Image (cartoon, rainbow, N blue to C red; front, side, top):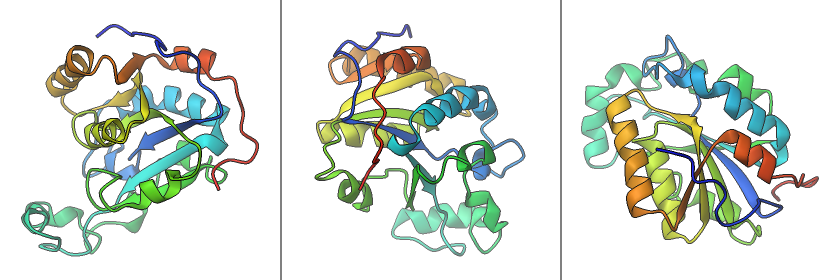
Length: 210
């Protein structure tokens, strides 16, 4: 999928970099390793370093014990019993070290499902903040990034998806999702490169989110 550029104009003070689940869980050697997470890390680091006060990192927090969770999540954590909090090193839920250094001023939002919207905490942060644009990075393209993007579209946010700063453990579904965004969401999702974001987002917010 070719980059579209910032078709709705430059980015500014109403923009937030939302980085999805770049945690040690998904780093090389982690229980849910995403092989090319390290490939996109430099782009994410550069974006976070330019706009740390306007960056929010999400973290996926597994269930405490095997079989816990509502509905089918209980089955999910029977299947993935070894990745529950009772079984793993607690450090694995932390951000990858090269991103953790931006917190603070960057903020962290924990969630227990794929979407950061379901539990209401992200809405609580953004409501009344003046933010109307989300620059989305992180992983995985076809799971938590997908849930993040669709929730943002439904809420009317301008969605800027940074193609060279998202990753998946499955190339086929990553590519399929990128084509879906281009063919079905071209009015609501701008597919860009990190260079286009950096060039088009010059404003630096000195106060950050409240």
